[in-house]
Amino acid sequence: MPTFGNTQLKLLERLCNVIAVSGDEGEVRKIVLEEIKPYADDVKVDALGNVLATKRGQTRSRKRMRVMLDAHMDEVGFMIVADDGEGIFRFETVGGMDVRHLVGKQVFVGKERTPGVIGGKPIHLMNGDERTRKVPLDGLRIDLGPAGKAKVSDRAGFATRFRRAGPSILSKSIDDRIGVATVIELLKHAPSNIDLCAAFTVQEEIGLRGAKVAAQYFNPDLAIAIDSTPANDLPVFDGGENITYNTKLGLGPAIYIADGSTLHDPRLVRFLQETAESQKIPYQFRQPGGGGTDSGAIQRSLAGIPTVSVSVPHRYTHSPISVARVDDWKHTLNLLHAALKRITPALIAKR
Image (tube, rainbow, N blue to C red; front, side):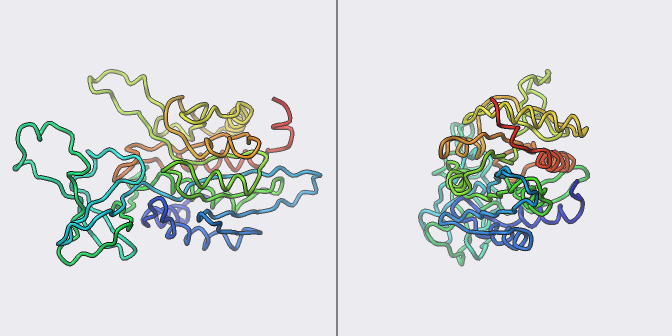
């Protein structure tokens, strides 16, 4: 198995601490290119900004499988849309977010990472109706102070810093920097039996856009989307048992069966399950429901591509800070590495 320790956690910290809101993924792309160029046979940045890398296998098989690994580089955040003067700026959200999470949160704006805060009316000045209503997005502003500068279309992201807390990781953008770090590690330890096609994609949070282009470029035999999925594993409000969880922290990688955009290939689902059990790696099934990963776009590319998704569970998705478990990430990396070494053409030869 690949080594797992402080080096991998430091890489994840670097990835999480930069800001790369959809459509402006350059800071993550820079780290990815720095990490993978010594290990890949071919590296390309396409017109959309995807990083597309290939590590060719060494076996003399008549037909090595082309396996695409996908992780998206972008994160949810904000776009400046108007200047109200005196350092006050109107903004729109980029990607799905709950406006209730935003008031009072610190942000960095633009390439200069200008510090600011998302401001709203304080409770002292609200009337009774305002105290019970959901705050509308158009009632919020990003405040950079009188000297603060920003341009229309500048991106802004949460100013949260990565932190390790015992068995947990606390950070913004775990979705999907933990997937990016995983694909980097798998490329560095690529097995010889396959041609590994690593796609670090853009604009997942606004419609899986980069993944479709990447799949068309690679034309793989199969694909695995590696992401971070919401864990709905907290107690319910009435104190009863939560029977509607989709994943839980501490149970290992989440193998998808179905989500809002994909019915995942049952051959690949069974293959990952069998690999986990043979290697004694803990795993869980991501319960069917909404949401989705880049697999939704990859599956429907070209003439169709067999796909499956594997995610690290985390709490508080698309908010200023999420929580994941270190061991869940370690087991995800180990499961995927073990699975890649076992792939042969027979895996998808029959339905």
